[in-house]
Image 1 (cartoon, rainbow, N blue to C red):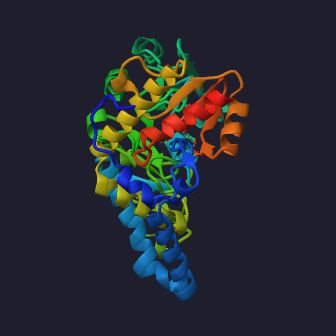
Image 2: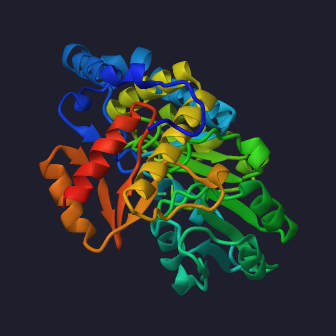
Length: 382
Ligand SMILES: Cc1ncc(COP(=O)(O)O)c(C=O)c1O
């Protein structure tokens, strides 16, 4: 089976991911595979903790946080000063939810294909008069711009939606959505957890006000580390009503009488970040930058098309965006009993995932077409 899009194979990186020694891993949209580099960086953190204790903070760990801000910034083409660090996407979203004024604009527009933690931030504020409008997807794959346009108006504070839908892998036209939101005076927040890494991201070209992503999936940093990008002109106009000492202009002043907010995106930080996760994430980002964002997209796009083509050959009807340019490496295979499929595959050494009515398969640059062939054959065996 040849990939329809000619792309350089990045399978040479596969040896850096020990999971492939015993498992066919096709579930990067749940959790990116652990690399030798990320393990080594985490062990370095543990060694420093063991040898040096708190003395490692000033010359090693605090600078690592700033290096990570810069690295996340480069990953989405933003400045380090526009990046706030968080332990999860939910935490990043909650600082935004606590920064907006809902008095004249009580409405938040999101979609039925977005990860629900997005809507939850604002559903939790219904008692404050916040209204959440969930725009439905007619095909469970994409949400037409016209439907979003009909929902966004002068009462809308924020449009909050995904760059890549976790439910279908479809890539949204964020630049068009940005124009729509801004024409109505609303802000745009994009949950890029399923995009950053596998799809090149340029927050300036996309025209977003907020963008969040993190290590768990395509940025190969594991759990416990995420970020929020806030467009620089917006930073000082917002004053989140949840905060922490890392958001202070000078956290080491230790003055409980006055909260002087940082002038840059530190303003949206909370408390002490998980340094083990920061270490793993720096290593993961280092590998991705070494490969290059467009090379990753090219390789991953070719793998996606290969997976779709092979699935069709097996008589399956993958639920993906109609236009290949709008597809990403999350391929939904409709199945009657996906839980049983996933369990059986796991017993044979294949890691994929189940979502209602579907087996979800997500390759990344470290996969090869042979992984798809073997997985689909095993699935067909039942
Ligand atoms: C698109 C998307 N957003 C958010 C989340 C959840 O983020 P967190 O658990 O970091 O709050 C997920 C799932 O893992 C996701 O796929």
